[in-house]
Length: 115
Length: 112
Image 1 (cartoon, chains in turn orange, green):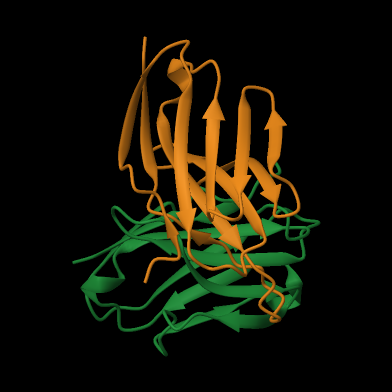
Image 2 (cartoon, chains in turn cyan, green):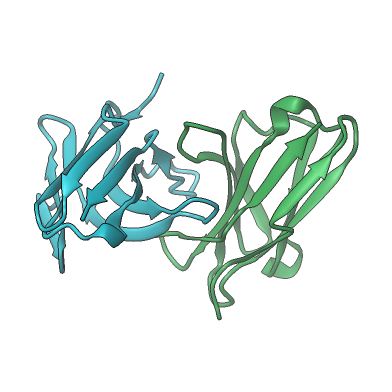
């Protein structure tokens, strides 16, 4: 049973426009959420995160929105650039008591920014 | 470069052989994780170390898998009697706290 779901396997956006990547989760114990970007043959690179006590976090062109009641978060990239083309993973963690705060990932969304 | 380093980047092995991967985390990070990623999936948690103590293991980590982090520095992940289903990207990550994990470039294992 997938606890973190990214229902769009791919997304194409024109350069300069907004990219919106969506993520849903089922585990109500998740209290910290992250977005990672991954290029082929490389490890994931951290982009931005948000704690469950907030509903928005912004860092430059990247903004993450969290809707706890809907168990939904989204990543907005404005403006989109060709270098943003990559696979984006949504991840979540909880305080399980074991102390690991392991990340649970979605399957990813492949973003293609068209020049 | 002071990022997370993994070695080797690629490993091809015959079924039934043993393989060992190494991870050098960012030096001041006491948290170290191993994840596995297969095609079309996100990374899946395997195990967690805080300093030298292995504190959590996933059910994905069968008894053919063993991980160590001697002296709380580098870590090794060994797979014994490899199977074709072990073919995947093995990712190591480290972090100073829970807020974010820094990943290495991964070791791609192919079992033939």
